[in-house]
Image (cartoon, rainbow, N blue to C red):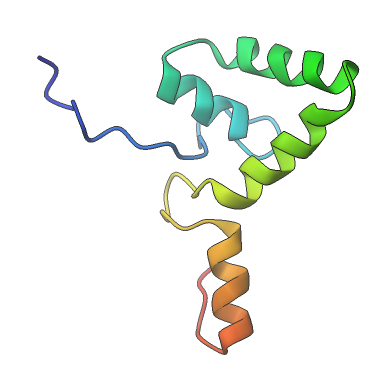
Length: 86
């Protein structure tokens, strides 16, 4: 088996990013090219606009590749008055 089995986590990509790294991170996690994920988001956007909503939700929820924390976690910490290293 692969030595990284079970250690794989869904994170925004630092290397395959155009806007925020969501598609690159999903592509790395699933094992497909990031351009196919971008194409899927474009198709969802053209077929009713849900692609934009899904992308924004993924951007807020998926942790950054280097820091390991998501944008929502930073917002919650700032709201609670705790220090956030964004």
